Length: 214
Image (cartoon, rainbow, N blue to C red; front, side, top):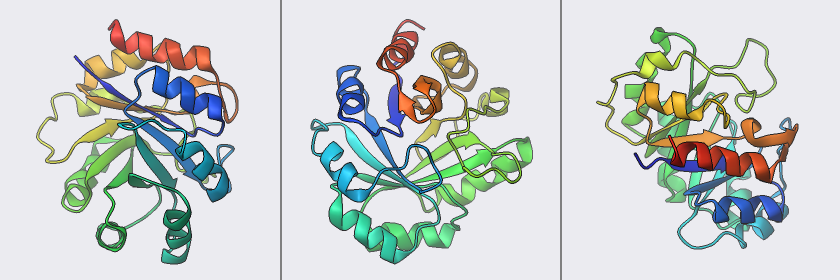
């Protein structure tokens, strides 16, 4: 099974080069000051200009207002906006209409009850990112290295929009995660880092290899 990879939280030119070499379909840049992966619009622009054609450049934002998104989209050549906060379905629809870019909405999952939000957001988003719900009081909405019970997604192939699996994925567990969920797209950030916020090219390669050989 061909599984698309999104390497998220890239912050250095070498990260972009590694992602492209490994056949990533998406690269993600984080615009959230609390994150150790946060980059400025100017830094992201320089990185985005190094991304080869055919690889989607995704901006991860958290409850960003129009002013912040105006500045971001004006500075960085982007292909997709990822909304990773508490945005409502209405806000997702507003962002999609205002910027004319595909929108991916991240949803945190901890129990089966959390799955009910998926259909509501599938009606307004272009893609969904199914992530682990952060612990209460956590500073970051994602990128915490947490996973959830992947069996909650087993057999759920009726969603109307493409979706991506995230949350605690590593080179060591991604093949099993895909086997249990049937995911055709996966997102990894902390799982391919050698230090907090710093990508490790060897772990990125091991992640891609684990999917190819699964």
